[in-house]
Length: 130
Image (cartoon, rainbow, N blue to C red; front, top):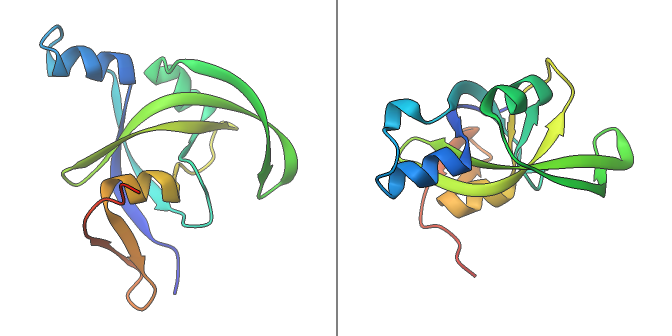
C-alpha cells in the first residue's frame, strides 16, 4: 500500500463556530483547501506553520511528543478539519513551513474514516465514539 492523500479543508475553529451559531457568514470563515496525507501513524492532524498563521489558529502551548523526527517539543493549535461531508475538531501539531499537511488517526476516527490497506483509500463508516 502506498500513501493515501485526500482533499481536505481546514477551518479556524472560532470562525467556524461563529458560522454555526449564525454570527458569521460562511464566506468569512478562514479556511484552506489542501491535499493532505491520511496518516494512521500520526495521532493528530499536522499543518505547516504558514498555514497555521494564514488560518489564525489559536495556539494551546507546547508539549513533549514523539514525532517522525524523534522526541521533542511541538506546538499545538486548535483546528476543524473536513473530508468529504464529515468534520472533526482536533488539536493540530504545528510543523515547519512547506511540510505536507497530515490528518491523523484521531480526526479520521472522529469522522468515521478508516484506511483500507488493500486499496489505499478511505472507507467511510460510523464515527468511533468510545
